[in-house]
Image (tube, rainbow, N blue to C red):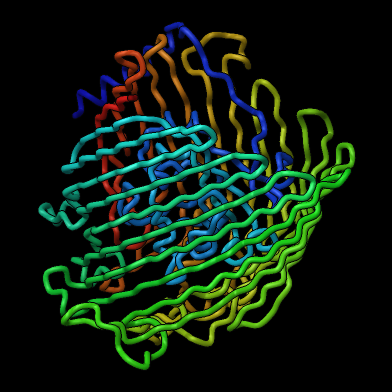
Length: 636
């Protein structure tokens, strides 16, 4: 393994003296983004896009690992390869980010731990849109600190992807596309397994990080006579060893989750267009605290989400007018969360659902988008009608002004909200106590920034501030032994973000093998009075996050992609003996080398955590060290 790493590094260094056959320039063309409810090409707000080219060359195989290097995003993984990941933006918590698939919400009402249970692989993804900042006036609940919108390919490829590596890792994937006249059909089947990995030196034989993941995804899209439709259905089934996921006192935990998702979108074209979205998401969660003795502590939860999102968009001389409404109902049955059911619902001979709860939220949106020469304005308001929390209004405005063709300044002021989930409301065990009297958390988000784009680079600098009220978190006070959910009165977050993609060859007028370099840097500061209590999630944010990506080309067929990141986290964590630890700053480096063989097939080698850094993303859950995988993608 050491020889393999040294060889790869030597190749990378030696290419500094080689002349590449070609280089890839940056595509800075605007695409349709979800920066407003009209989904126009005018990117008024600060939307970052991970392109298809970046996705195809990254040394990763999951959406979660790809987002690890995105601007001001904190991906706290309890295990790699998309087993379970908490995602946060701009120093927020993992409950405050809206995750969407083609503009349809996927957030789980039980807990944000399951939000990234996405039923598709990177092979089906065309791009990922990242909106940093509150956006409730556009998207409603969950869009508190930002939005992740995964856009799938309308016309996918035909391929077989097989890879294997350390820790008993095997990944097999089949993708197929069929086009019949104006209709595209995409199907993807994926299976991923691993035996787990040795967790740390004191437990050399511990392998309670094993997993099995099965994904199925189908999508069909049509375009006919001014009517566009998109239908998809997905299913993901996960079983994984959850070493110390929720407590290190009983580390040998196990969890099973199943997610089924389906949506239908219909959009008409014209001066007045109509866009309808119907969606459904079901999630099953089975948690076992003692893996070898499930009957000692066994949790079962099942959630269902039903939603409809309806918009009427009118084109005007200066932009668009939008009126929209979303009705979303979610419910849960559980043996832990909710109020007592009238009668139990049997799960198996030993277990039953005994509790449940449901709620309905209606959001009414109005929006006006205007363009006056170099000035673009998007303003609107969302009225939130909640069966539990009553009514509230969330206004906002986004502005941008083109100083030149390549330089644009932008500013925004938006109010955002998030309602508590079922875990925060009802979960109870010997050391945790939910609070059914929690209220929704609110924030006011302000930002000011500049975009500077030309043929050489695409650069953004943003300053932001978020003032939060009634923040929801698990806290423990001095002298207490129980973590309780509570509304923190105020919590202010401020910081800045810098992002740039640079074409080195165009900048230096050379033909170096290193073509494109990407730089992201962010700094977040939290101002909160926590002297009277200890916080579980709101304080241990990323203070500084730096990432660097580079692409190298050796001839026409061989390329290397490098990704590195530096993370400096605030806060501390404790073990079961109440010993306190600080999060150490870490450097992570990953690489992917690929070679084109037999026309269009790709042979590749991926190495994650090249420096074999020992670290934790959360608490006492250690992350995997150096890990290599080899694979072959066969394009049919």
